[in-house]
Image (tube, rainbow, N blue to C red; front, side):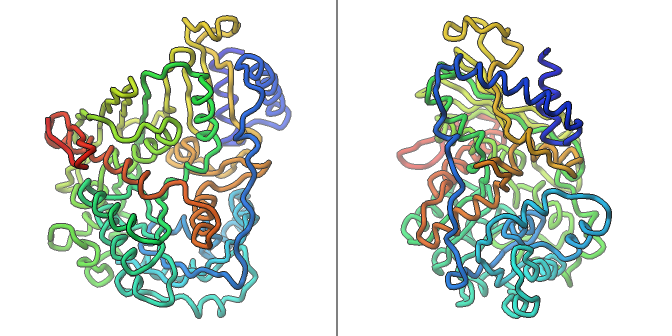
Length: 514
């Protein structure tokens, strides 16, 4: 089997489920044959991560946790979905339009975490009202609608929510610029916090947030759900067992090629968004004052006053994936460049092409990031080692180095993988057809595969947070991991802004312009 055919087989099955049952079995037989060989070739009897099991239930009716959601955009609602809360119209559509959506039954079979969506806060009336409707409909419970709806409330401001006795914990899924202020206020009010990535908008905010969270007793989790992906856990074990040899370079990428992928999204709501339906002052939070502008509101990710660009929105995810495998931490210096070439929606100022180099001299390696919003070709993260190269996302493939001594007896040349890990090839996720959704799933932002079951990675990440609130276990992406993420991508944005290398002074926790 040639490399091209092998890759087509292994990648197409998990994403589109396009092959017939017979051909799928044939492909998986080839993969299973290689799995047997890989154990012999890698000289590893077993991987510890393969024995991992799903954590048990920690909740019941007596330990219900009341959650408040601050920010009910598309990501906020998807977090509600992972708790089991879906809009009734979506559920009805899946039942009546003739399309079989496997994802909904998977979600319904997930453990009931015994959380109530007790409050919704959003600066856009349409989003807030939809959040209320979603929060009344838990597909994992048989509770009546009146019983659930009687306990859910819309809060006009996040300050009202965090000071409410009816809220135990909050999820913050607002624009990047307001993450730190809302979270600091919530922690000081004694609320547990699940904060969507990126953690902060600036290094100064990250330093302050770290102080506040570290001095508290609240449970704090950053929304990097790929901490739950089995592929990255296995990647860490492969690295620690020396399978790759000396790692000298890590290459990361973002490729998008659509208006939605470029965060130009006002067209969906521009006829509904106005000064009567949007709390403009609440949206601005601590950002510089501007007169009301619906483009700024709906396309906030394109403005440096509110967003962090590709490096904060996309690379932050990839960085955390890589950081959990290699534990590199914050680089000594960063150099970045790019440009704002293609999309103009006003006075937006964040680049749509971005390149950065992260320098780790103490680890004898560099990491690169190449991002573009004008090409949709998907690229895996690539780790270059002296013995083998690893391509990793929700799957793993290893290729021997042409000059490898450890794998010199392997028959395959360096163009063919000699080891693979792709458990989701046995699953098949129907209904994933758009380029953006496919990219998200390939990158690992969908299901993972544990203990013979298909599990939503975001569900596992939320469960980890909820379990920790109940005193069971710890979070995997807390304030220290969030601090490393924010500082790293902010150094790149600063380098792009100043057109100079930026250095990190770890003792004083501040950056220096080269």
